[in-house]
Length: 350
Image (cartoon, rainbow, N blue to C red):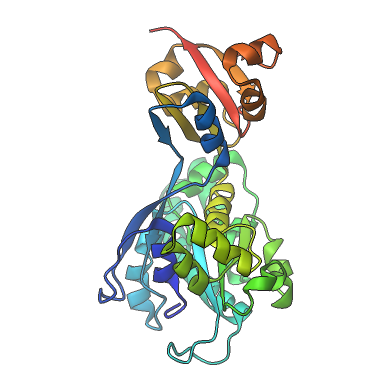
Protein backbone atom coordinates (compact mmCIF):
# COMPACT_ATOMS: atom_id res chain seq x y z
CA UNK A 1 0.00 0.00 0.00
CA UNK A 2 1.12 3.66 -0.29
CA UNK A 3 3.15 5.28 2.52
CA UNK A 4 4.32 2.02 4.13
CA UNK A 5 8.07 2.56 3.58
CA UNK A 6 8.28 0.35 0.50
CA UNK A 7 10.62 2.50 -1.58
CA UNK A 8 12.74 3.26 1.50
CA UNK A 9 13.10 -0.49 2.02
CA UNK A 10 14.06 -0.91 -1.64
CA UNK A 11 16.81 1.70 -1.23
CA UNK A 12 18.10 0.00 1.93
CA UNK A 13 18.20 -3.43 0.28
CA UNK A 14 19.80 -2.45 -3.00
CA UNK A 15 21.72 0.73 -2.05
CA UNK A 16 20.13 2.17 -5.20
CA UNK A 17 19.56 5.90 -5.52
CA UNK A 18 15.87 6.56 -6.13
CA UNK A 19 14.51 9.98 -7.03
CA UNK A 20 12.10 10.90 -4.23
CA UNK A 21 10.16 13.05 -6.70
CA UNK A 22 9.57 10.22 -9.18
CA UNK A 23 5.99 9.28 -10.10
CA UNK A 24 4.20 7.01 -7.58
CA UNK A 25 3.62 4.43 -10.33
CA UNK A 26 7.27 4.36 -11.49
CA UNK A 27 9.09 1.02 -11.27
CA UNK A 28 12.63 0.79 -9.84
CA UNK A 29 15.03 -2.14 -10.23
CA UNK A 30 18.08 -2.88 -8.08
CA UNK A 31 20.40 -5.71 -7.08
CA UNK A 32 21.26 -6.78 -3.52
CA UNK A 33 24.25 -8.87 -2.47
CA UNK A 34 23.30 -11.93 -0.41
CA UNK A 35 25.16 -11.81 2.94
CA UNK A 36 27.29 -14.96 3.31
CA UNK A 37 29.99 -15.28 5.95
CA UNK A 38 31.23 -18.45 4.26
CA UNK A 39 32.56 -16.53 1.26
CA UNK A 40 34.36 -14.01 3.46
CA UNK A 41 35.93 -16.65 5.72
CA UNK A 42 37.13 -18.83 2.83
CA UNK A 43 38.56 -15.74 1.14
CA UNK A 44 40.76 -15.22 4.22
CA UNK A 45 42.23 -18.68 3.61
CA UNK A 46 42.63 -18.54 -0.19
CA UNK A 47 43.40 -14.81 -0.50
CA UNK A 48 41.76 -14.61 -3.96
CA UNK A 49 42.06 -11.76 -6.43
CA UNK A 50 38.27 -11.51 -6.57
CA UNK A 51 35.34 -12.20 -4.19
CA UNK A 52 31.85 -12.65 -5.66
CA UNK A 53 28.67 -13.02 -3.63
CA UNK A 54 25.30 -14.33 -4.77
CA UNK A 55 22.75 -11.63 -5.65
CA UNK A 56 19.00 -11.05 -5.74
CA UNK A 57 17.20 -8.56 -7.96
CA UNK A 58 14.46 -6.50 -6.30
CA UNK A 59 11.80 -4.50 -8.15
CA UNK A 60 9.92 -1.66 -6.46
CA UNK A 61 6.51 -0.89 -7.98
CA UNK A 62 3.91 1.74 -7.14
CA UNK A 63 1.51 1.13 -4.26
CA UNK A 64 -1.91 -0.49 -4.63
CA UNK A 65 -4.56 2.03 -5.73
CA UNK A 66 -8.31 2.13 -5.17
CA UNK A 67 -8.99 2.24 -8.91
CA UNK A 68 -8.88 -1.40 -10.09
CA UNK A 69 -8.25 -0.44 -13.73
CA UNK A 70 -5.13 1.50 -12.74
CA UNK A 71 -4.09 -1.38 -10.49
CA UNK A 72 -4.16 -3.85 -13.36
CA UNK A 73 -1.43 -1.86 -15.13
CA UNK A 74 0.68 -1.35 -12.00
CA UNK A 75 0.55 -5.07 -11.14
CA UNK A 76 2.01 -6.16 -14.50
CA UNK A 77 5.67 -6.08 -13.25
CA UNK A 78 4.69 -8.49 -10.47
CA UNK A 79 3.97 -11.21 -13.02
CA UNK A 80 7.65 -11.28 -13.99
CA UNK A 81 8.79 -11.77 -10.38
CA UNK A 82 9.67 -15.13 -8.83
CA UNK A 83 8.27 -14.09 -5.43
CA UNK A 84 6.45 -11.12 -3.91
CA UNK A 85 7.29 -9.00 -0.88
CA UNK A 86 4.41 -7.14 0.77
CA UNK A 87 5.59 -4.30 3.02
CA UNK A 88 3.14 -3.89 5.92
CA UNK A 89 3.12 -0.67 7.95
CA UNK A 90 3.35 -1.04 11.72
CA UNK A 91 5.01 2.28 12.58
CA UNK A 92 3.40 5.51 13.76
CA UNK A 93 4.49 8.75 12.11
CA UNK A 94 2.17 11.81 12.16
CA UNK A 95 4.20 13.32 9.31
CA UNK A 96 3.30 10.33 7.11
CA UNK A 97 -0.47 9.83 7.52
CA UNK A 98 -2.02 6.36 7.42
CA UNK A 99 -5.57 5.48 6.42
CA UNK A 100 -7.14 4.56 9.77
CA UNK A 101 -5.60 2.66 12.68
CA UNK A 102 -2.57 0.45 12.10
CA UNK A 103 -3.84 -3.07 11.43
CA UNK A 104 -1.46 -5.58 9.84
CA UNK A 105 -4.04 -8.28 9.06
CA UNK A 106 -6.48 -5.79 7.55
CA UNK A 107 -3.82 -4.47 5.15
CA UNK A 108 -2.50 -7.96 4.36
CA UNK A 109 -5.98 -9.26 3.55
CA UNK A 110 -6.83 -6.16 1.52
CA UNK A 111 -3.82 -6.59 -0.79
CA UNK A 112 -4.28 -10.38 -0.95
CA UNK A 113 -7.88 -9.93 -2.11
CA UNK A 114 -6.71 -7.51 -4.81
CA UNK A 115 -4.23 -10.12 -6.06
CA UNK A 116 -6.87 -12.86 -5.94
CA UNK A 117 -9.34 -10.74 -7.93
CA UNK A 118 -6.67 -10.17 -10.58
CA UNK A 119 -5.98 -13.92 -10.80
CA UNK A 120 -9.70 -14.74 -10.79
CA UNK A 121 -10.32 -12.40 -13.70
CA UNK A 122 -7.48 -13.98 -15.68
CA UNK A 123 -8.60 -17.56 -14.94
CA UNK A 124 -12.24 -16.81 -15.82
CA UNK A 125 -11.33 -15.31 -19.21
CA UNK A 126 -9.25 -18.35 -20.11
CA UNK A 127 -12.00 -20.72 -18.95
CA UNK A 128 -14.54 -19.00 -21.21
CA UNK A 129 -12.19 -19.50 -24.15
CA UNK A 130 -11.60 -23.16 -23.26
CA UNK A 131 -15.33 -23.87 -22.98
CA UNK A 132 -15.90 -22.41 -26.47
CA UNK A 133 -13.04 -24.48 -27.92
CA UNK A 134 -14.28 -27.68 -26.28
CA UNK A 135 -17.71 -27.24 -27.86
CA UNK A 136 -15.98 -27.33 -31.26
CA UNK A 137 -13.64 -30.26 -30.50
CA UNK A 138 -12.90 -32.52 -27.55
CA UNK A 139 -9.22 -32.60 -26.61
CA UNK A 140 -7.82 -34.21 -23.47
CA UNK A 141 -5.26 -31.45 -22.91
CA UNK A 142 -7.94 -28.72 -23.07
CA UNK A 143 -10.18 -30.68 -20.70
CA UNK A 144 -7.29 -31.09 -18.24
CA UNK A 145 -6.56 -27.35 -18.38
CA UNK A 146 -10.22 -26.49 -17.80
CA UNK A 147 -10.41 -28.84 -14.82
CA UNK A 148 -7.25 -27.30 -13.34
CA UNK A 149 -8.50 -23.72 -13.81
CA UNK A 150 -11.87 -24.68 -12.31
CA UNK A 151 -10.04 -25.86 -9.21
CA UNK A 152 -8.05 -22.62 -9.12
CA UNK A 153 -11.18 -20.50 -9.51
CA UNK A 154 -12.93 -22.35 -6.70
CA UNK A 155 -9.97 -21.68 -4.39
CA UNK A 156 -9.83 -17.99 -5.32
CA UNK A 157 -13.58 -17.57 -4.86
CA UNK A 158 -13.21 -19.01 -1.36
CA UNK A 159 -10.41 -16.43 -0.76
CA UNK A 160 -7.62 -19.00 -0.75
CA UNK A 161 -4.40 -17.96 -2.57
CA UNK A 162 -3.03 -20.45 -5.08
CA UNK A 163 0.31 -20.72 -3.26
CA UNK A 164 -1.52 -22.77 -0.62
CA UNK A 165 -2.65 -25.42 -3.15
CA UNK A 166 -0.69 -28.54 -4.07
CA UNK A 167 -0.20 -29.27 -7.77
CA UNK A 168 1.24 -32.18 -9.73
CA UNK A 169 4.32 -31.55 -11.86
CA UNK A 170 2.31 -31.55 -15.12
CA UNK A 171 -0.14 -29.07 -13.55
CA UNK A 172 2.72 -26.76 -12.58
CA UNK A 173 3.86 -26.73 -16.22
CA UNK A 174 0.33 -25.90 -17.33
CA UNK A 175 0.06 -23.02 -14.85
CA UNK A 176 3.45 -21.48 -15.61
CA UNK A 177 2.15 -19.55 -18.61
CA UNK A 178 -0.48 -17.76 -16.52
CA UNK A 179 1.97 -16.28 -13.98
CA UNK A 180 -0.79 -16.08 -11.37
CA UNK A 181 0.13 -13.59 -8.64
CA UNK A 182 -1.20 -15.61 -5.71
CA UNK A 183 0.83 -18.64 -6.79
CA UNK A 184 4.07 -16.83 -6.08
CA UNK A 185 5.78 -17.23 -2.68
CA UNK A 186 4.98 -14.31 -0.37
CA UNK A 187 7.31 -12.49 2.00
CA UNK A 188 5.58 -10.19 4.48
CA UNK A 189 7.88 -7.40 5.67
CA UNK A 190 6.57 -5.84 8.90
CA UNK A 191 7.89 -2.28 8.97
CA UNK A 192 7.90 -1.56 12.71
CA UNK A 193 8.66 1.58 14.73
CA UNK A 194 12.02 1.98 16.47
CA UNK A 195 10.35 1.58 19.88
CA UNK A 196 9.59 -2.06 18.98
CA UNK A 197 13.10 -2.83 17.69
CA UNK A 198 14.52 -4.11 21.03
CA UNK A 199 11.75 -6.76 21.07
CA UNK A 200 11.87 -7.58 17.37
CA UNK A 201 11.80 -11.33 18.11
CA UNK A 202 8.32 -10.91 19.64
CA UNK A 203 6.78 -8.75 16.92
CA UNK A 204 5.00 -11.60 15.11
CA UNK A 205 3.49 -12.86 18.36
CA UNK A 206 2.62 -9.35 19.59
CA UNK A 207 0.64 -8.57 16.44
CA UNK A 208 -0.99 -12.04 16.38
CA UNK A 209 0.54 -13.08 13.06
CA UNK A 210 1.68 -16.61 14.02
CA UNK A 211 -0.89 -18.20 11.71
CA UNK A 212 0.37 -16.11 8.82
CA UNK A 213 3.97 -17.22 9.41
CA UNK A 214 2.95 -20.90 9.34
CA UNK A 215 1.28 -20.76 5.91
CA UNK A 216 2.73 -22.60 2.93
CA UNK A 217 5.36 -20.78 0.83
CA UNK A 218 5.12 -17.75 3.12
CA UNK A 219 7.63 -15.95 5.33
CA UNK A 220 7.28 -13.04 7.78
CA UNK A 221 10.20 -10.74 8.65
CA UNK A 222 9.97 -7.79 11.09
CA UNK A 223 12.09 -4.86 9.95
CA UNK A 224 12.59 -1.33 11.31
CA UNK A 225 12.94 0.94 8.29
CA UNK A 226 13.94 3.99 10.34
CA UNK A 227 16.84 2.21 12.07
CA UNK A 228 17.93 0.38 8.91
CA UNK A 229 18.04 3.65 6.96
CA UNK A 230 20.39 5.07 9.60
CA UNK A 231 22.54 1.91 9.63
CA UNK A 232 22.92 2.10 5.85
CA UNK A 233 24.60 5.50 6.19
CA UNK A 234 27.12 4.46 8.88
CA UNK A 235 30.58 2.84 8.66
CA UNK A 236 30.57 -0.85 9.71
CA UNK A 237 32.01 -0.22 13.18
CA UNK A 238 29.46 2.49 14.02
CA UNK A 239 26.62 0.42 12.55
CA UNK A 240 27.62 -2.54 14.76
CA UNK A 241 27.65 -0.25 17.83
CA UNK A 242 24.19 1.09 16.97
CA UNK A 243 22.82 -2.45 16.52
CA UNK A 244 24.16 -3.43 19.93
CA UNK A 245 22.43 -0.40 21.44
CA UNK A 246 19.12 -1.67 20.08
CA UNK A 247 19.89 -5.29 21.02
CA UNK A 248 20.00 -6.44 17.39
CA UNK A 249 22.18 -9.45 16.58
CA UNK A 250 22.16 -8.74 12.84
CA UNK A 251 20.76 -6.09 10.55
CA UNK A 252 17.22 -6.34 9.28
CA UNK A 253 18.61 -5.89 5.79
CA UNK A 254 20.63 -9.10 6.08
CA UNK A 255 17.71 -11.00 7.60
CA UNK A 256 15.37 -9.87 4.86
CA UNK A 257 17.71 -10.74 2.00
CA UNK A 258 18.40 -14.18 3.49
CA UNK A 259 14.66 -14.75 3.95
CA UNK A 260 14.11 -13.81 0.28
CA UNK A 261 16.77 -16.32 -0.76
CA UNK A 262 15.24 -19.16 1.30
CA UNK A 263 11.69 -18.39 0.18
CA UNK A 264 12.77 -18.64 -3.45
CA UNK A 265 14.09 -22.14 -2.72
CA UNK A 266 17.67 -21.08 -3.45
CA UNK A 267 20.96 -22.31 -1.99
CA UNK A 268 24.60 -21.48 -2.69
CA UNK A 269 27.49 -23.75 -3.50
CA UNK A 270 30.99 -22.29 -3.47
CA UNK A 271 34.10 -22.38 -5.60
CA UNK A 272 37.43 -21.32 -4.07
CA UNK A 273 40.90 -20.68 -5.40
CA UNK A 274 43.48 -18.00 -5.97
CA UNK A 275 41.60 -16.33 -8.84
CA UNK A 276 38.23 -16.11 -7.08
CA UNK A 277 36.07 -17.17 -4.12
CA UNK A 278 32.48 -17.22 -5.29
CA UNK A 279 28.97 -18.21 -4.22
CA UNK A 280 26.86 -19.70 -7.03
CA UNK A 281 23.07 -19.64 -6.83
CA UNK A 282 21.07 -22.77 -7.66
CA UNK A 283 17.65 -24.19 -6.83
CA UNK A 284 17.55 -26.51 -3.83
CA UNK A 285 17.51 -30.13 -5.03
CA UNK A 286 19.71 -29.62 -8.09
CA UNK A 287 22.21 -32.33 -9.01
CA UNK A 288 25.96 -31.81 -9.32
CA UNK A 289 25.70 -31.82 -13.11
CA UNK A 290 22.92 -29.20 -13.08
CA UNK A 291 24.94 -27.08 -10.64
CA UNK A 292 27.88 -27.20 -13.03
CA UNK A 293 25.64 -25.48 -15.56
CA UNK A 294 25.42 -22.46 -13.24
CA UNK A 295 29.10 -21.89 -14.00
CA UNK A 296 29.06 -22.75 -17.71
CA UNK A 297 26.97 -24.93 -20.00
CA UNK A 298 30.18 -26.56 -21.35
CA UNK A 299 31.03 -27.81 -17.84
CA UNK A 300 27.53 -29.28 -17.50
CA UNK A 301 27.75 -31.04 -20.88
CA UNK A 302 31.27 -32.38 -20.24
CA UNK A 303 30.66 -33.24 -16.56
CA UNK A 304 32.70 -36.22 -15.32
CA UNK A 305 32.89 -36.01 -11.52
CA UNK A 306 32.83 -33.42 -8.73
CA UNK A 307 35.18 -33.05 -5.77
CA UNK A 308 32.94 -31.94 -2.89
CA UNK A 309 33.85 -30.74 0.61
CA UNK A 310 31.79 -28.96 3.27
CA UNK A 311 32.89 -25.33 3.64
CA UNK A 312 33.55 -25.68 7.39
CA UNK A 313 35.77 -28.73 6.85
CA UNK A 314 37.71 -26.85 4.17
CA UNK A 315 38.04 -23.82 6.42
CA UNK A 316 39.44 -25.91 9.30
CA UNK A 317 41.74 -27.89 7.01
CA UNK A 318 43.13 -24.74 5.39
CA UNK A 319 43.44 -26.17 1.87
CA UNK A 320 41.97 -28.79 -0.47
CA UNK A 321 45.10 -30.92 -0.06
CA UNK A 322 44.79 -30.93 3.74
CA UNK A 323 41.06 -31.70 3.49
CA UNK A 324 41.84 -34.67 1.21
CA UNK A 325 44.36 -35.99 3.74
CA UNK A 326 41.58 -35.91 6.32
CA UNK A 327 39.28 -37.81 3.91
CA UNK A 328 36.84 -34.90 3.88
CA UNK A 329 36.79 -34.43 0.10
CA UNK A 330 34.28 -36.76 -1.61
CA UNK A 331 34.20 -37.71 -5.28
CA UNK A 332 30.57 -37.41 -6.39
CA UNK A 333 28.80 -38.29 -9.62
CA UNK A 334 26.29 -36.39 -11.75
CA UNK A 335 23.26 -37.44 -9.64
CA UNK A 336 24.66 -36.09 -6.35
CA UNK A 337 22.26 -33.56 -4.77
CA UNK A 338 24.23 -30.42 -3.98
CA UNK A 339 23.95 -29.16 -0.39
CA UNK A 340 24.00 -25.55 0.76
CA UNK A 341 27.61 -24.65 1.62
CA UNK A 342 29.26 -27.37 -0.50
CA UNK A 343 32.61 -26.30 -1.97
CA UNK A 344 32.95 -27.97 -5.37
CA UNK A 345 35.68 -28.57 -7.93
CA UNK A 346 34.21 -29.90 -11.20
CA UNK A 347 36.05 -32.38 -13.39
CA UNK A 348 34.90 -32.11 -16.99
CA UNK A 349 35.98 -32.77 -20.55
CA UNK A 350 36.44 -30.08 -23.13
